[in-house]
Length: 122
Image (cartoon, rainbow, N blue to C red):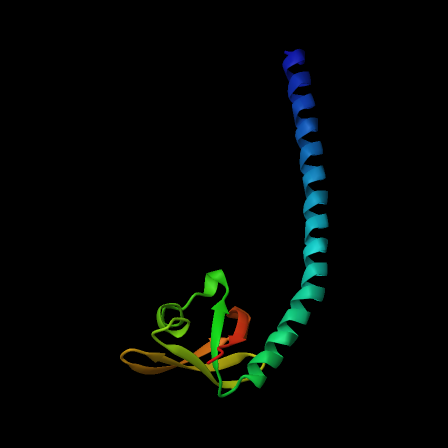
């Protein structure tokens, strides 16, 4: 009976060591992610804000982040059947006019969902 208690004690101690090392690794990853967010994220956002402001009134291609896809932009705005035009932009939002085969639509898109903006050369 004492042997079974000893075996469970060893397994419990090993589980404790695994959990404590995992906690340290998670803390290291969180620190690394906050460093990355503080440097490259803000530089890209600043460039994106400048691009959106300078492209007002021009036809553009807009690439959205994977988890923020929009059906109208995907189907019409970035294709030969239609186009996107930036009507207004600020630090939080972009107002787009999307030309579709059936007409035009205006869409308000969060700046955080935009990955890249490029001007269409005509």
